[in-house]
Image 1 (cartoon, rainbow, N blue to C red):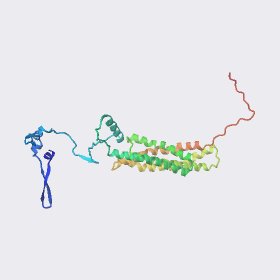
Image 2 (cartoon, rainbow, N blue to C red; image 1 turned 180 degrees about the vertical axis):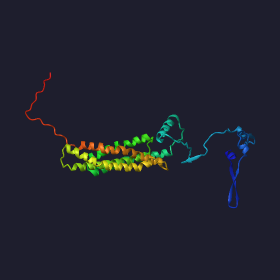
Image 3 (cartoon, helix red, strand yellow; image 1 turned 30 degrees about the horizontal axis):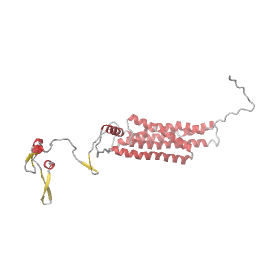
Image 4 (cartoon, one colour; image 1 turned 90 degrees about the horizontal axis):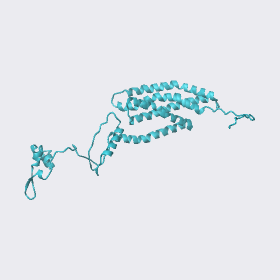
Length: 309
């Protein structure tokens, strides 16, 4: 019946090198009318002639415009366009709604493809890349300073240095994505570099005070070492901002991705330098300040304590 309406190739016409199929189907005036299709004659095996409507249901119903198959199974696609929200949360809510309201028959399954599939793969890789990056940074810090406490000091300040990037993403209305994750990885590397150079200056200034400096000398040395880093750090931050700000406000091709990579870096250039210039020297001072000896009580100096009832 479908061949009678949609047509079926019954032969092929050969004209020189050209081949033309011969298609047979009902005329258009019959194919366009459901009533006429119901009244089409059908010859039974016993020789009787009945209409098609007596043995079949003829109706018009909506269906997919094209049948596709993947891995030997019929497949249908539902396209969803997300605007104003992050893709991950939308798909998460969609999965919860389908699990609660839709009962899938046997043999039918759902899968989420497209950008969400790429996002899931990227997050799986980032779950390996980010810890590996932090481990490499810590290893390099230990190789530089040969002290676990100093390496842990710089690693401990990294989360505070990244807060500026989170605030700028919030103010600009950017959602978390793979591009912003790449920007934060780059920001973590720059923040660790700031801390390393500051700590090198502090250690160099402290070494000039000798092997056993007192508390005042330690405080003075750390203050001098921190002041030596103000001008170089300001120049470094200015160069980074001058290079990334045009990317942040750009509107050309690929600007949506590049601006989300640059935003964490620009926001972090506010908090990371302040952290390395103020918090890091203070924390290093607490680590290196010598403890004052406890006062000893001279022998024979007995004090009368008040009696308690």
